[in-house]
Image (tube, helix red, strand yellow):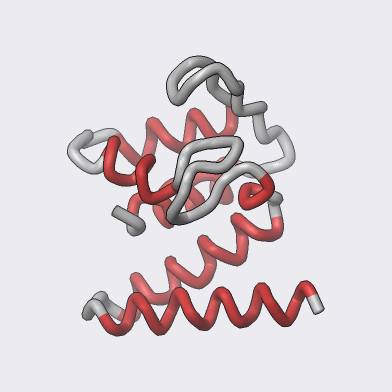
Length: 113
């Protein structure tokens, strides 16, 4: 049942991306990013649209959208964790991720602005 809901969410994300007119490459980034976020339990603390234990990923994207180094910055925060940026709840380091996976997640988050 869980894999079915993940598939439905991924399909919904791709359809939403298509409806706002982004490129086919960006469609793939959206689907891969969402799937990776679900597989790596990012969604246990984050939601796309509303704060949960951590900030809404949409808010993260909006906050860093103007930074030239936003993708590299978020990749670093994903891999090494963070404290005090979004409140008192720390984000733990995600040592199970490869740098490539962290970069993919950062890129996906930035598409959510």
